[in-house]
Length: 509
Ligand SMILES: Cc1cc2nc3c(=O)[nH]c(=O)nc-3n(C[C@H](O)[C@H](O)[C@H](O)COP(=O)(O)OP(=O)(O)OC[C@H]3O[C@@H](n4cnc5c(N)ncnc54)[C@H](O)[C@@H]3O)c2cc1C
Image 1 (cartoon, rainbow, N blue to C red):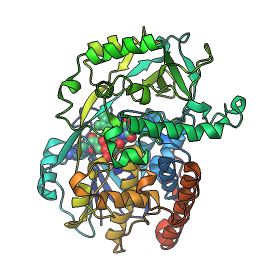
Image 2: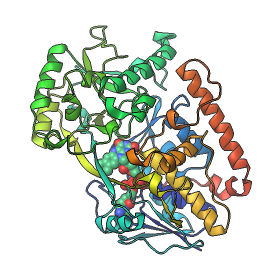
Image 3: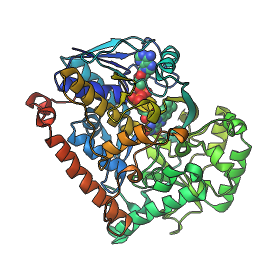
Image 4: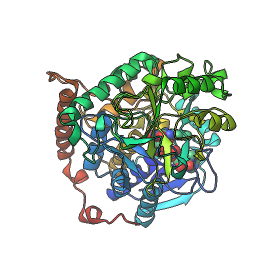
């Protein structure tokens, strides 16, 4: 009995931990450093390739709920995230090196896990006692992609995502920027001076982000936009979730117009082709958003609502937010500023932002490939391939979007692969939970228009009687989800009560 897992990213490592924690031996194949991807920089498992944020961490947003469910399911990714947490207001952001070190070390030390550094070029044979999980992510190597295409019986779908630039902290002109969370919504409790505005602000932040979806930055997002997933809860590429401790670069109308003119005339591979390419709408390059209209950015990543420039006492005309990207605090990423402007031009355009005139870039923005299967055609709710139930897909390539969602799918695939190997029945939590809703979405959405999704309250089964008010409704959905998750876990206590060794294991590398 052995579970073979291909891919040591967010999904594969979580799956390995869940399966091994249930006493099933695991062989985890990771091709780095033998073979690189276009984006990963290290040989660490669970490397975060872009933003260091796991997004909102409160129960009034869906990704906060998903994370809480994962904690209750003893997620390794969540444990490592807590142990490497950096200040990010009401969001959960991590020191990426420490995060990856903890996961790498924990799995390396696990007596039931063997890690093999090699590229797998064809899907391994699988049986009920020896299931296989494929979790090779958006940058699945070419050889394996070709084999996957033959197994899923149709061509892969490809589209493109983009990532944000990072600047060196001591090259930011602090006399021009100010530190503030939108609506002063912060875990560090800076709400005092605003009194009751905190909670009003929290509502407002979500409201205005909803408007953002409607206004165009994410306007054509259809179901996802309507649910507010990219707005109220933050997008995979790190669009502001309204909940962090940020450095804000305020722009006047003139400064915004100068920036806009430079941006729309900059050389970008994306803009020339953007009608032909298929971008994930929650992760659009800024130049693509800008080409949708002069104000689109002011309702998207440059929106000023909820910010007050202390030097003027007023809301700026537009603002760029910078988020701390590592524990040392010497790297800051431009929130929601994914771009494919040519690098020389990128520096010139971004240095027009007040505070960034002399910025040095640790990393420029870029566009990357994203490989995923058509979930509803291929997968069951348990993350098994319908046509071959001893094979599981998990993570981004299975048709979810985002670090947390990828880890969540790996969690459930790992549990179910272990159940299968032990001869137990596989199952998925109910659709009233975030993790169950995600599994249901991936396996039951309309295959004709399938797009990978972040978790949103919109895909969780609605309440029979919902309270008035968005925040109250979301909190009620969360309360029901956690109760239903507990009931689901309680139905099979042997599988969910963690043993003492596991509970007491120290994750410090
Ligand atoms: C450039 C980029 C930026 C992104 N930015 C964000 C972001 O800011 N926030 C966010 O939430 N999500 C982001 N995503 C999505 C992100 O990739 C996923 O959220 C998450 O990393 C997916 O986890 P995963 O485990 O599915 O894949 P990964 O974490 O990519 O792990 C897959 C692993 O499989 C390995 N592998 C691939 N092929 C093979 C093979 N044939 N044999 C053996 N090993 C193989 C890879 O080396 C990799 O380690 C981004 C993706 C990319 C590519």
